[in-house]
Image (cartoon, rainbow, N blue to C red; front, side, top):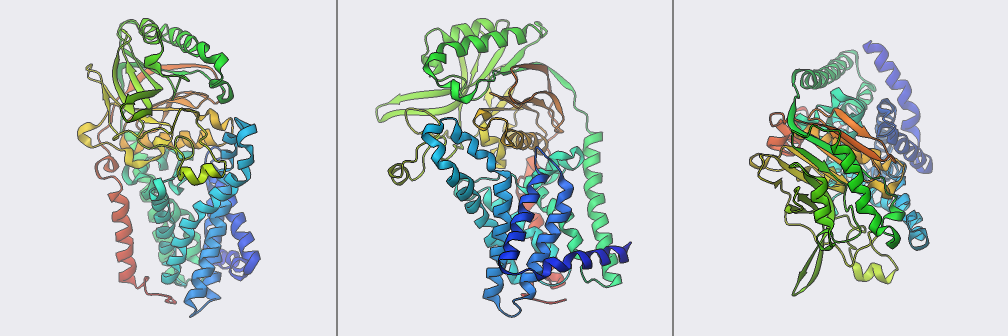
Length: 537
């Protein structure tokens, strides 16, 4: 087996080692685009066993062709990595164009810029990190560790720089496998990215290895897989999730984005929600309390300023039930009017019990960065509102005195790991309210759903998700989808809220786990001599 693996790697690698110039860039673009197939909704993760080793061998070719020319090597790694990630982001984020078609007469002209400039800009971060990694490259198996550290650190940087955009970090390929998904409870998404990169790039480690070293590489790879499978299988099978007395129902109104803000539909939305809610509550046990969840910014008006709205909501919630709904909140102060993207907790008397204001706003959606410059170029926010939204103070849980607490995450707040609350504030469940109608039936809603699902596993906390046009779901703390409404369906789902699991290692330590893994690998490479610049084995 060792001899066969080594021979296959040697034969497979040769074409990738020899490409230069435009042929190398085109190949990198293709490999990056193919890598997007590993992510939802396709979820064909085995493709990474082809694309990641091949990309690593392209970098080997750039390394071999620039011996003792550090600047040329840096440029070769940078250009190769940029083209790879440009292809990856272009193929996995093309669906953002759909948002510009909601008001095509106003925004369609921006589509070519959005689908090229955004992937091109996102590719700069991993390209720079990989270029820096060229300073520590080698021709031995240890370069696979350097490669995995570089790309996983690039994921972390992308999730934090310039307000952050960690969409489709490498760890999210685990969404296709419930066993590997459990590793996020131990590692978080960035630690899982590191693991995924090591697993799928490992074939490159067999290139030009002697029999003894090839055997050691194979044994290390087998151990890596065994530990991952064992830890994931243990968590998935050994931990028990049981229902709580609290019932939950999720409403998916399925209102097209182009219709939501039209004045003629203004007075039709609340009756639509109330009808769906009344039918949903009729399916529940009236002797047990229930939480109803409506999606993000459910109404094109300020809910608390709409005459009669809250009493109507209270009437349909009769029996002690609670509503969590997204809505725009206005605050009129002496220094101006301020608007927030919020979640309200409302009781059966139509009283607002608590409000959470969205902390992490979407640039170009909820506010316009560099406003003076971009407005002069004709660029405006996509979300209609009297002014830019104001960010909330901090992530927090809502409480209403019945012993139940919930952490709202509005829209793409669910893709960020720094939304994790301290253990002393740990909620009973996470409510992700969102409006993915902007992206139709493209890949976007499926990728967003996968990221919300990982938050449940990372923290051992159930997630209840209400999306205007889907995907809405009740997800247990092991990532199991208990009930679901697919994209562009109207209706509701019901069930008992799953119980919390004990705090996971990730919920206790957060991304310090990822930092510890990176430091451990760096120390290992230093001990083995794998960080000596341009060392050849």
